[in-house]
Image (cartoon, rainbow over all chains, first blue to last red; front, side, top):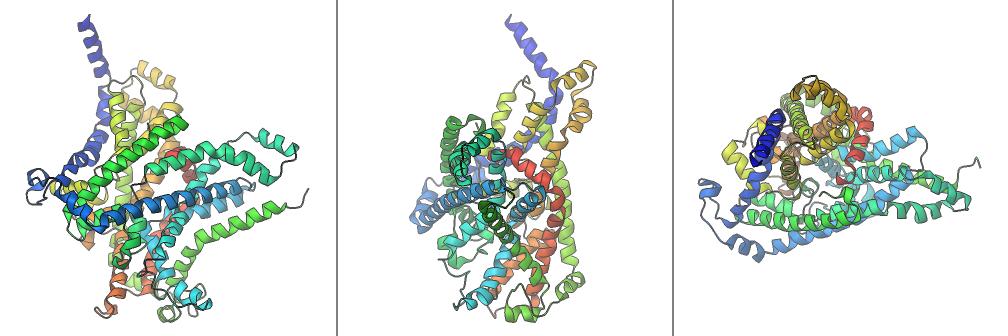
Amino acid sequence: MADGTTKTRKKQWWRYRWMYLMMLPGIIYLIINNYIPMAGLIIAFKKIDFRKGILQSPWNGLNNFKYLFATKDAFIITRNTILYNLAFIVLITVTSVAVAIMLAEINNKLALSLFQGSLLIPYIVSYVVVSYLGFAFMGSSGFLNKTVLPALGLDPVNWYLETGPWIFILPLVNNWKNIGYASVIYMATIVGFDSSIYEAASIDGASYWQKVTRLTIPLLKPTIITMVMLSIGRIFYSDFGLFYQVPQNSGAILATTNVIDTYVYRGLLERSDVAMSSAAGFYQAIVGFIVVFAANKLVQKISPEDALF
Amino acid sequence: MKKLKAYKVIILICLILLSLAAVVPFILLVISSLTEEATLMRNGYSFFPEVWSTAAYAYLFEHSSQIFRAYGISIFVTVVGTAAGLLITLLLAYPLADPEMPGRKVINFLLFFTMLFNGGLVPTYIMYTSYFGMKNNILSLIIPNLLVKAFYVILARSYFQNSIPKEIMESARIDGAGEIRIFKDIVFPLSKPIVTTLLLFIGLGYWNDWNNGLVYLTDPKLYSIQNVLNDMIRSIQFLSTNSGVISTTTLPSNGVRMAIAVVCTLPVLIAYPFLQKGFVKGIVMGGVKG
């Protein structure tokens, strides 16, 4: 009997042999690109010696972490990463829901595609190009310094050397770049709503504003909660391009622009401080994983089909 | 009844302003690339320059060897990366859509786990440079992180699961067609929507990528157009913080930099109106998980 089942199982595997062959390149890629680096996280506990490689380098206990958390940087990058992400989540949710609700009122197809198309343009360009756009506005002879500020009677600002303005610039740029994408998702949900409830509300004499606040927003709630939870799951990660390119890697404003991702990059490739960099990377991977896991558990409860697992 | 309601007017005004805000920075970029250099230095970046000039573009075409080379590398990387990435993604997704394949659960988990946890930059960098020779290798613009993304595999898998009738594959199997032939001749031609979506997103990802070049390349000969742009803005930064240390003549003027940024974005902006519909569909398809 047992012999029979192993035989059929074997047969089953054999029947799928071509399927396994098809998957092989993808699986090999995932092992190399994703799984080996996971194992490579152990370098955070080593005194890395490039000549000896990851495995042969001597162990260093928790020293890398001790060094990292003894610096001010550990606190600054954690604070910046989390606070910026929170600001981004609030701002993008409010604005993209508003834009989606407005777009849903546009019945003219051409107008709709013009609005939607324009709002999506920032999303399809790279952050290098965005840093050029930023430079045209904020450079020493940029539009702000040469046209806007003089018109308001203000002195020019050295945008790339002043820490203060960045707590507003970064959320603004992030919102500018991503509002199109987020509003497409919300709008797709709104378009799917049953129009008969809206007709019924109109017959009952509901105003437009009442329909938005009493129907659209409550109906959008599950989507909003899911999107927010998924973003909260990523709260320990940030968009490297936004924080590296837009401030143009300026050292003077790190207090308000440095996040974990940029810190890890600079440690590895600019300061050759692999110890700190690998410790910060390990810290991000572990805490990041816990947060993603918890956030997804919550999404699973609220809206199972949107959860990652 | 016929007159436009007040709220509609407010909505229209808001949307017009927001759309302008999205587009205006690009207009400033284009105009500054068409502004005479002296005017640009004197009056700053402006929407209404005193003196227009195409000198930046003329300069670009005269000194175009690096730009053309970088452009060629961008095109090569985008074409090869997108084709290879798409193929590997589809080949991984298609078997996973079969609910009876043994081992399916394990592979699905391995795939999905990569979205929750990753080793990050340091181990990835050390692995690719010390064991795969990726430092200053053109393959570094194609392979690390960009080639196959779990999210795209999952999108393709659910397309195969939900949009391709099982009966067609079954009858082909009964007729004695092999799995690879079924995929090639039956499934693939029925998968146009997902293929278009993936082509768009993977292709855009490659064209826009500068991250791999930043990490793995130090040799400017291998730079993609994005890396050339990235390199130039660094030198502006260097100039503004160390003014006077190096002579400005060795660096292209502001107008030229802006012109290169325009040339780099142009293919995307020209293709965009034709792709917009597919792009919006793709975002909706990816839904909230994007």
